[in-house]
Amino acid sequence: MVELLLIVGLGVAVFVGFNIGGSSTGVAFGPAVGSDVVSKLAAAGLMTGFALLGGWTVGREVVETMGGQIVPRDEFTLAASVGVLFFVGIALLISNVFGVPASTSMTAVGAIAGLGVATGTLNEAVMLEIVSWWIVAPVLAFWVCAVIGRYLYPYLDARLQLGRSNGPLLTLDRSGVPTPRLGPGTTVQELGTVLLVVGIACYMAFSAGASNVANAVAPLVGSGVLSIDVGILLAGGAIGLGAFTIARRTLDTVGNDLTELPLLAALVVETVSATFIAFLSAIGIPASLAVSATMCIVGLGWGRATRTVTLGEAVRGASPELSVNALAADSADEVAPIGEPDDTLTAHELFNPGTTGRIIFFWLLTPSVSAVTSYLLFSTVAL
Image (cartoon, rainbow, N blue to C red):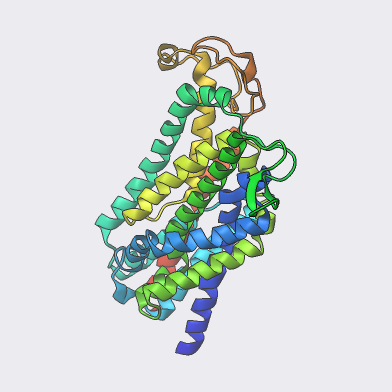
């Protein structure tokens, strides 16, 4: 029986990591692949390596939090660990069925909290700290990007030309000692752009690994059936498996959520959201990359849109006379001063309020359902 439970637990852990790799690769490398900077195969390889690096370094703190600080390690029997991982798998199923990026981190914490309440072992101080960061971090992400969108983004957009020329980026000069040269039409600025795009994507992959390896293996590490090193390697391998397989589709679907934005906007969103998640992972807080990235997108678009009104007018409740999607507007050589109309800011909406409300609803629903069902399971069945 124990051997069967262990096999089931390992299988569920791999399933969770597999799905994380599939979705996170699209989020991290969607802009890079969408702009033809890297191939899907290269994206999968980079995602695997940097996600494992993030899990092996910063991600240990999150594994420790979820595997022994929310509830004591003694509560993670093998059967209980399988039960917790089962609820994470259910969250992924809900996410796929309804097309909403549910947070596996929040759902996993909800399942562990349900176990703690059912057994009377929940560490309320740790749980309060986690929930507090869940509230504060998205708000901070919104306002950081809103400030960038209002005061910095238009100038960056006017000065930087983030695009790709036709043909290879580099060629190999074989006239003497083989030496890499810039390809036809390639400029130094373009080469720098490519390195920037790939570097930020790798940073995003690192951050995703740091926050997500715990979702796949923390309960098994807490139960003692896996060491933390083996658990991280297992999760990293499962994430890589997802990156090389189902991520080929998510790079075209999940990745499109960012690549529909201008490349500069996508890079700003990735950098800010990845920085928040890396910081939270470093202090042991399991958090959602999808939530942070979405709030960054909303904040960046809202910030640029509000340039048509002054700060005083905004405080008095004046509304900008344009769509929230100021990000999809064409670049301009000159930036209109704040408070003046800007014809370049006409574009379709960045987000539909109904869709945004549905996403937020499911962000709240999935961890709540996970916590309640986990409580009902562990309070009625001794595992």
